Image (cartoon, rainbow, N blue to C red; front, side):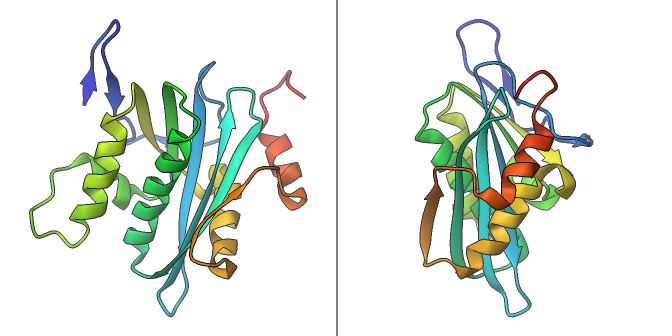
Length: 185
């Protein structure tokens, strides 16, 4: 973990250890929150999805990606990498990312051996993390990242590549509204 006060970089990639979000919480003022999830069907067909919200709980953008064939852990890692890549497009200095995969978060936080089969994607994620001014990774229950879970499941039906979703799909409007902090409309 790297945390330097002042104008230096601050990274909290170990912050998730032992802490699981119980209810959706907004990111700090001026930050964005990225919720991500992977989905794998019985035939190992994988997809991922997620969304970015601002500190008021408003939808910034959603995304889906049809991955092809891979393991559950790889799908979760692809979700994290894709979320960070999409988040990079919005150039916020602070990012708070939530995933329900403790396995994926642990792989990112720990040193992996040179011949680890997921080393490339883990390295990609770490590079995205350390290229940012401030980023935190957190573990969340599936209940607190429901929209990401639904977007990931729907990603199976998409063409390969990343699909960006600019507006809140009507079917998710109630979920987004439920999560919004009290006092915001």
